[in-house]
Length: 205
Image (spheres, rainbow, N blue to C red):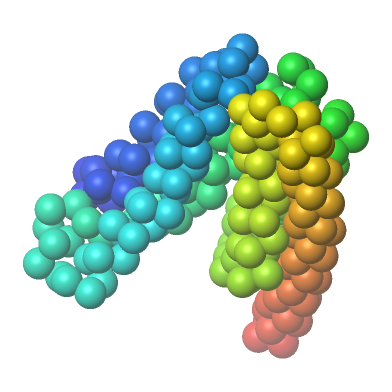
């Protein structure tokens, strides 16, 4: 893909690159002081939804597109990558300081790593599939659950903190299972697309 100035310099892309640059700093702060830093991390995570909103503005209001409020192919690929990098860094920070159980963090990282690898492989081979609603919702559920584990660190009441952590772990497990199922469906759809493409090429030959 040729990256032109118009393709690269958009408002959503600026937010995506900014989030990617600042994510290691946020992760370090979450490792050192999760109770104080989680609101900042939540704001950075929320920006992922805001840049999507800005990208769609150009569709609804074409006059705004000239000011950078528009979609781009670069953004379509870079935004989910930045999101996964940020989440992975937060997971690593939580596993290192004991906020996130290592088995849970490992499971989430493995799921995210597998779907990222599948996506990169398929797009490198010309197979581009939209993320399903199930995939988006379960990833969101997992991220909310992981965030709740950090929020629990700021709760003084020990019993309430334990309850929040237990609920967050349960939600995270459900999210990881759901996201894994969505990843399986994605892999199956990509495989079917690849077979259909090879069949068409053979027929045309």
